Length: 314
Image (cartoon, rainbow, N blue to C red; front, side, top):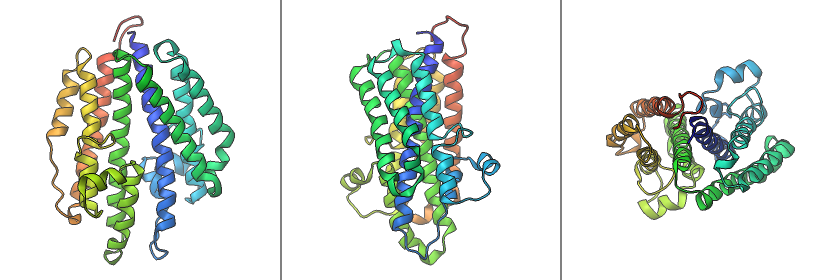
């Protein structure tokens, strides 16, 4: 496979996952603010902090209100990670690799991109936001399902897998970090009530609520929810599962040793969370270390397979 094709498939998967994750994040945050008691104040600007977009946001907007935050995350073309910007990049990468993916992919991504552009005001306005975001999520899942059901498990598939699960792990660490930060910023007397709502929404943001109930078989609390989202080996949005998929895909490709060793080091760390008191600054440092490891894995994937002369194979 040509290295440029491999790179475009990898980034197609990352951007497609980013579109879905952004839609999930805004949708669940909308529900969180609706369900929280009025005495607990939570800002929409927290979403900008989750995605490390403070600098760009503050260059564009003076007011940190709901409308500006949602517009920045969904529609702002100066934000390279906005939903519309990411959809544009998926479309461009698929356009230039159409012979490496199922032929229906091009039609599906065009439909999704067109729907998003024509209906973006529904996402920004609260009244129809839920329907709009659900349609975006379903559109992404349709494309992922097409890949799963109609692609050979060859080199192209392995690059898609690495891109998808690296992006998913990145968002997973950010969501956990944001939940912990929200709890630490709250008043001690409000934490029990806030925690019950917050960790339920965190699980729902990853479509993990029912699986948590079936697997953990207990009420939801911060330590158990965070442990599940980090360590469960079977659920496809936990960090352990994501890193396992990255390692498995990399192992099917040449020169994967540095990547698999980095992943093995991550999986070998068992961070203990006995109670909600363990969700503290030390745990945030652990999540930050995982973020750095994700950046390093992305760098190594780029060095391994994408930095070739034109015409070289990945």
